[in-house]
Image 1 (cartoon, rainbow, N blue to C red):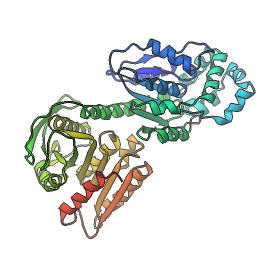
Image 2: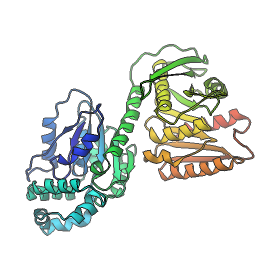
Image 3: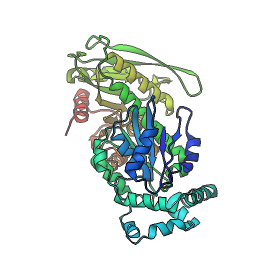
Image 4: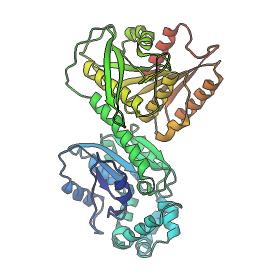
Length: 464
């Protein structure tokens, strides 16, 4: 993990974020020379000269360094996996401050000690610990005011729009909800050029990595987990095992949970009538409800997926119930689904850009959760007759590329309210939503079920 610092260029302010990183990350802070003559172009050359990394790496860039990270990514650096942009911009985020440059005031301002109220209001937040306030003062006071003023001028003049267009690396933008320096407009400008950029909205001031390091780490890990599976699914030139069309195969899913205990479940999958490994096929992952099982849910969907040309995968909940199986809300359910997709991808030629997730009842709730959490994997979701909980929004993202089909029976008052609330949430996040009430239906699907399931797949797989 390459860490590119903010305006001071020292990287000292990364300390709390680095402490929050789990062991799988190896952070490397790239500090900048305290030299007023170095603008973005010179710093780009400086960083490239110091990047000699043989292993896959990501770049995390905060504030001032955002345009620099984009410039580096546009160079198609070897082994660069992704870019994490934090409270940053591609164009001047403070147009009103340009006047300070013209009047020559910026340099004089950086010579003055920054008052505590200003640090709290504009940078660290009202509830920031005193240690962070003192650390901020220290890095500013030890940086040459001419260097700070020079970098301020670079911000005013920067425009990394073309470099962003030339950058093909996946990007996660960490957006500080309470940022008084970089507004939401900067994220909008980035997404206008790269709609695929993911965004995580975090309750924090401009010093997001310092104020909310754990939330930032969680957002980065979720993004990379989804990206990792997406890259696995994207594997080119691999040979696929032969699978008989329409034959239902059973997968044994075994993994260790966070406590070290071994979890065991199964998944069923089948390929459609005309399946051939010569081309990629869409995949629908269907999650059964509480007390149901993978086999029954597979039977429900199979005639539809066979006729429409979808690979069908039905994981089974890892929690045993009196009637059948259910899903837990911890990481075990996610692991079971992810492992199932990975195994099927090795056996069947799956199109990674046409993976869809659906679920009924409790499986639909899990569908909501995973759809919000892993938009890099699932390009469409269809929760049916499912409760929706706003706790799923802990992974707030911009979802312009996601298609959402929400079906619910009108006789289920609680679920009808939940469906409407979910539709509003997804619409606010930019998803294309189709809310379908099932008139006169309770907890179930309208008859004929196959017709409704076909409508769902046609909506999810549509390009309109």
